[in-house]
Amino acid sequence: MISASAGATPANKNALEKFFGPHLPAELNSCAACHVKADGHGATSLEDFPHNPFGKSLAALDGKISERLDAVLEKDADNDGVSNLHEILTGRFPGKTNQQGTFAEPTLLDRKKKEFAEFQKRYPWKPFESVKRPEIPTVSKTDWARNEIDVFIAAEHEARGLNPRPEAAKEIWLRRVTVDLTGLVPTPEEIRAFQADESETAYETVVDRLLASPRYGERWGRHWMDVWRYSDWAGYRADLRESARHIWHWRDWIVETLNEGVGYDEMIRQMFAADELYPGDEEKLRATGYLARNFHRTRDKWMDDVVTHT
Image (tube, rainbow, N blue to C red):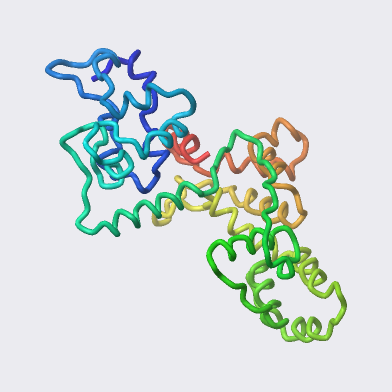
């Protein structure tokens, strides 16, 4: 075992897992991907785990670990004639010369490389960095896009060789938007009223009406309650000792706040600190039910779940 002082500062223990995500074979999710194991005695410091050739190639570079990994993927750290990326995707250690990644079907490796390339293009989740407005892409079919969001969709259409579907009929569009915003289908009266409305703002009028409906908060409140792990019962028989009996106040706050159009950022502030920000406002204090949602009669279990799921 590495001593506590050495174990506290491992350089990038989970770097491969974060970089490759689901494309990293389980056997490579190990320190051995970049280090040589201690030989014949217990390790007492990181010096007992020197870098293998792949680890050395990373250590020789500067910058973020993701940038360094990207720089060495197509190189051959152990000089066995197979690229680091090839070996990693095939479950072989890129720093061991006796492990060469091979495939009976070359097309399988090509598919893995293509899937990994698509994975790298995913939206980079960086919670501690401010969200930046992306540049609007340039598209050839400018007549289809009606707003900036459409332009991004049109760009993906062109990149994938796709053509957009024809515009939906009014009754189909109404059903889609009504189900999406309220979880309900439109009534016959609503269908007739929308079909009869020939004004330029007919579509906007429908959306505004649905957003103003109490059903909107109920529909999307269910979504956010799933995200924020709402439950008013522990799920074991009739045992209420593991349940937060008053958590329904938080549920009602979620629904009402969505219907009031409160911003997501303000909702987060209230859930974490309404007692500090609005100590005399009983309506907003309900938001702190978020902090009690993992209630457990065993305090250690309760606190562990709060940390894990917050």
